[in-house]
Length: 129
Image (cartoon, rainbow, N blue to C red):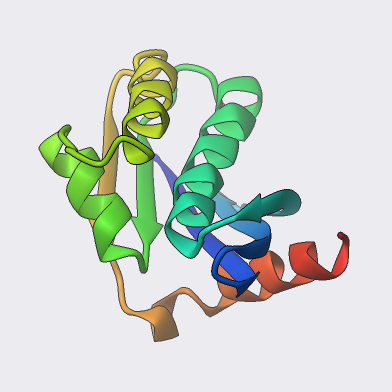
């Protein structure tokens, strides 16, 4: 099972945004910082999950994925597989499509203090813009 920690960060809301991804795969730990452009904090959180799924699709095809995020909004939308928000809907649809490539995909909410590594990577991505 692959453990994936994701976080989005923005400077302003909306503002410059970045995604941080920290992956634990057996004894290997990978980290990624993706600049995202201008968006809201919630959008950055969704894009962090999307970027992480793209990484996993290439690096860990066919694996069981266990994601963690400190965004209750993202976790709730993905777990309920539903949103009325017209901005979140295409992001949810992309997540659905990407997760279909894996036998199992789980996501759970964690406290911010448990997500510090991904948070640091998201802030690093902000500095890359």
